Image (cartoon, rainbow, N blue to C red; front, top):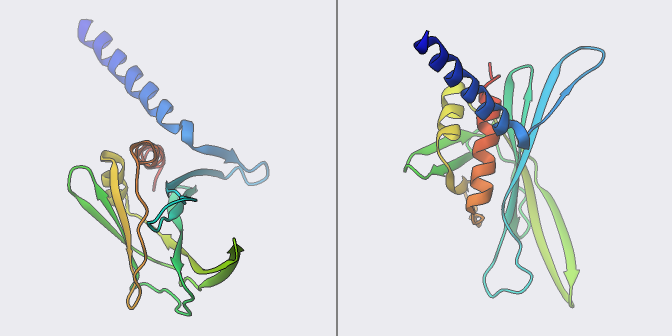
Length: 184
C-alpha cells in the first residue's frame, strides 16, 4: 500500500510539473475539425539602441499541429542578400551540457530585404524565415538542457548570433518539454 501511495504521488507531481511547463504554450482546438494546435514563442537577443557593438534578436516560434512539430526561426543579417536558403542551411543549438543540436532548414527561405532610417542614417538588413523539423530524439535533447548559444550556418554569409540569456533559455526548454509530451 505504501508503494502504491508513493507511486501515485510521484505520478501526480510529474503531471503537475508537466502542466506547469506548458504555461508558455497557447493551445487551441479547431471547432470544426477538432484538430489541436500548440504555439510557443521565444526571442533570443535584444537590439541595443545605444551601443558600440552590433546587436541582434531572433524570434523562434515553435508550432505543433496534430503532433508534428516545427520551429520557425526569423533571423536577420545586416546588408542586402539575394540568396535563397535551402536544406544546406543549418541551425545550431548549444546546450549547457556541451551538446550541440544541429537542425537543417526544410523549406527554402527567400530573403526579404528592408531598410529603415534613423537619425539621418540608413540601415539595410535582410531577414529569413527558416523552418526546422526536429525529430523526437532532437526534441528530447532540446528539452533536457538550457540553450546557451545559437547560430545559423549559411554559405557565403556571416550572420551575427544573438546573446541568449537564462530566462529565454528556460522558456525555450519549457516550450520544448511541453511539445515533446504530445509529439509524434
